[in-house]
Amino acid sequence: MILEPLTPAEDGALPGELLTELTALYASNHVFHALSGDFPDPDDIRPEQVAAALADELSVPGAEVLVARSGGRVVGIGITLDRHPDPADPDPWIGLLMVDAGQQRRGFGRELAGLIEERFRADGRTGTRLAVLAGNDAGLAFWKSLGYEAIDHRRDLEVDRPCAVLRKPLL
Image (tube, rainbow, N blue to C red; front, side, top):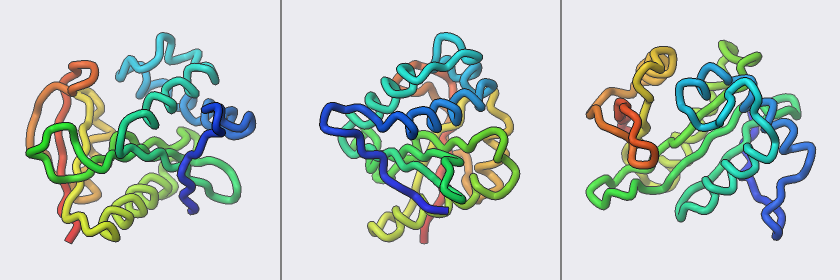
């Protein structure tokens, strides 16, 4: 698997072929998007919506969008934040890890998470956190299988949704 930082053109646009692949990735995960409410119609996710969502992510200081490719095609995406807005939280965050629904259960999610964790380790970070939305039982099971443990239950800062906060030491 290869990770590529997403770098839009100077005008903020994404290359058409990449945007098409990313839209297909997002659209394949309609069950997650129905839970998250991130898109008005999770069964009809459009390129302009994905482009806007990614532009919003990239506008956050310290955020990085990583595109995962295998065999030349997009299989996943990871969005990271080098630090949480709460100054008492020292850890970087995985804001989103999503694998194409047609490619799930092939180890891509585990590999993508491992590559992100390795990037954090290389930066000298000692742990990482993430939030799992309430009701995302498959997501919670996935992260727990990777060694993440729930450390809190609270509402997310952006949309006020209930979630579990998980942490994993990176020693």
